[in-house]
Length: 347
Image (cartoon, rainbow, N blue to C red; front, side):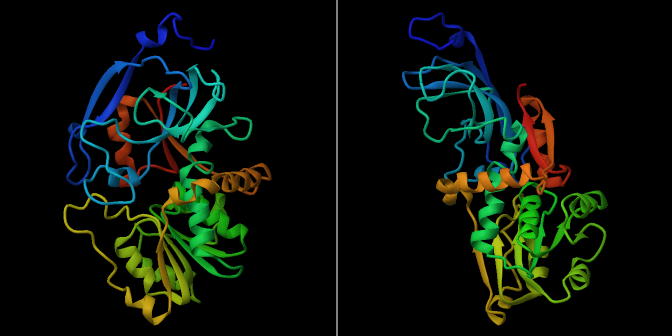
């Protein structure tokens, strides 16, 4: 039923379990960098509503949000609930736009419930289009990052060669499939034979280089004999340096992430081969998905259409339990996750 002022305060009696940032991590985040707290959920104000978290998106960018310093988004403060995007369901409401039972996507944080004072930043989602986990993958922030990063920044043309690092991950799997649908030759870079098999046999990439099994340089020579026109970089470090040596004239390098650098205890290693950009009149540009927020419906509509037509697939790696958040997050940096990493908080 719709929550009302003066109604039985069952919401007030509920406890919200939360994960808060207790300290700035040095290197890989440790369990004692987090605190586990609880507080009453609280009733929604007029025009507001309460969302029960069902699933949370775990993303490499979260590591950067823990660091103090200037970035594209303010850092999570010490003592604050850890920032995270998620999907959930409205369980109490004083907003006609978000009645009880509505499924939504929003910045929910690593917690069981969130009270919203308005609908700003909250999007309704339809489970008839895709199940919950897809709204955190291809139809969520990773998919929008891939879609707009590739098409707006990378600007691939039919027949060009596109290379994608982190190819089996949330962003990489979408980048490669969109590039194929746009008529490109696509080569992935991933860690392990199983991931490379998935990238080629299930996602339809033309080839995949296993960076754990051999020399990336030799793999690029073999699978990109005519060079690289677009490189979508999710890892940074040595792999970025190596791909830079294979760029074609007027190539585009999309900087999405640098997961190899996020937990370094020394200064971030910049590209040593950056002069390749000069020699090849190439361009390197970053992608921050929030810049495209007003265009998300465009990306969602196209990716959902490809899904419905059977032209696009996605894979999720789901971990159960809010209490397992610290260990689940580390899977991103060990490469242990297979597909988009999702934390299921409730069913």
